[in-house]
Amino acid sequence: MADRSWHTSRQDQLRQLAELERRLAEGGSCDLRVRQAALLDGLGRTEAAKQVYLGSLADESDHAATLSAFGALLHRTGYRTAARTVFAQAVACHPQCPDARVNLGNALRLAGAADDAYLHFAAALAADPQHARAHQGMGDLLAARGDQNAAAHHWRLGYTGRALHGWTYRGEGPPIRILMPISVADGNIAARHFLDDRVFAVTTCAMEFHDPAAPLPPHDLVFNAIADADLCRLALSAAGALIARTGAPVINAPARVLATGRADMAAALARLPGLAVPRLATLPRQIFLQGEGPGALARHGLRCPVLLRAPGFHAGRHFLRVEQDADLAEAAASLPGEQLLAIEYFSACGADGKARKGRVMVIDGRLYPLHWAVSSHWKVHYFSSDMDACPQHQEEEARFLRDMRGFLGPRAIAGLQAVAELLDLDYGGIDFGVLADGRIAVFEANAAMAIVPPAGEARWSYRRPACEVAVLAAQTLLIRRAGFRDVS
Image 1: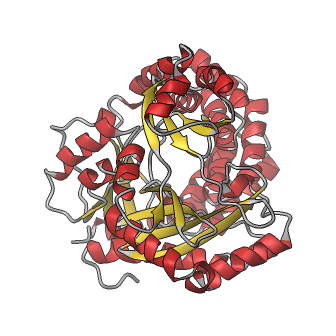
Image 2: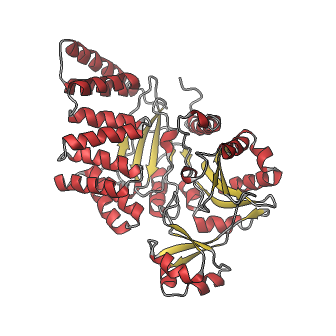
Image 3: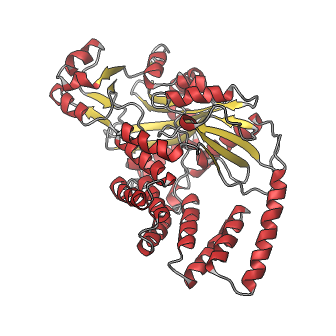
């Protein structure tokens, strides 16, 4: 069960903190304050750590270690704009420091500023060609652009010998130790939103670079976070081999995740009654480039308008709607990879002509409504939808979150339950629309569904209860499967 070494570690931290505070009372450097703040943060006293960092910067505004550690704390706790400001100050003060460049590069990449992030990763590698985190960040950025070969080169330099990474545990009691297989590619569950570091001690394992002969770290549970069966098949196979070496309980068995690729799920869902499932075909990109796209689509019962998508990408990247046959070659040329998914286009528009897409989480077999997005664009994602400035859309979503069954109707609920049973994952989700006849149109069903808490503004208060319920369900699943009845 739980590793009791946490107690010794915490006592050591408290002793170190007391000694540092004694020395600082006699006068101390910014370096000592950084150590003090890191200990406070590690003990779960995050607000106190922030104040120490601010005090250090008040005395020495260009102190490199303070800027780096303070920016990391801000980014981890959700203050991402402030974190970018701190990281940018670090780069301005220390332009030759590769760590400063990597910190800012990662923050910019996650904010969608890929070109600026590239410049900082390149500068970090110019200063230190062996910098592991710079290679990791550059690999992530290049993969998002679709340059898989270049990404693999940087990942190899960044992860070889560094497959395991432990997250800081900040709890006061014994942790639930989680071993979490991941892929270096962008195909993992965004688990930080519900893996509370005051409850869970997490060690991630990048499966593409894990030595299968290496001993596994102590763990109470294996949570397979690899979610994309199209992008991460090798990583999922490696995770299956890892799991065969442990007797710990498993969340999201890799074999189950492997069955949830887009083409496999589309074929399986099409056999369920009462659903609207878009037809899908996996086709060589070269067919479209050679002008043979219309015929290839017709052989699979598809025609324009059609959706073309590069497998293995999320958040709308490399995903286009093609209106006419004459545009197929140009569209395919703009997408990466050797294979493309051709998907039947379903309109899930309301009477106002706007598209709608809901998301329900499927956690331990139960459905949890998460969001309902309304958009003027056919490609509906919550972050780019029309929800932000429209109270009417927000009220529509609030009705979905308060009473999903009444909002959708029995036919749609039955359809979602059937999809959940077919999905057969411990943790997953369904993105869907509702057609005029009450059927649901299933756009996506897999493990790669994020529970993203809403922003802090008051207008999103109606969304928080549903998000909190889903987060609690995910945490409860992990706690129970690990064999813990109570965590205090």
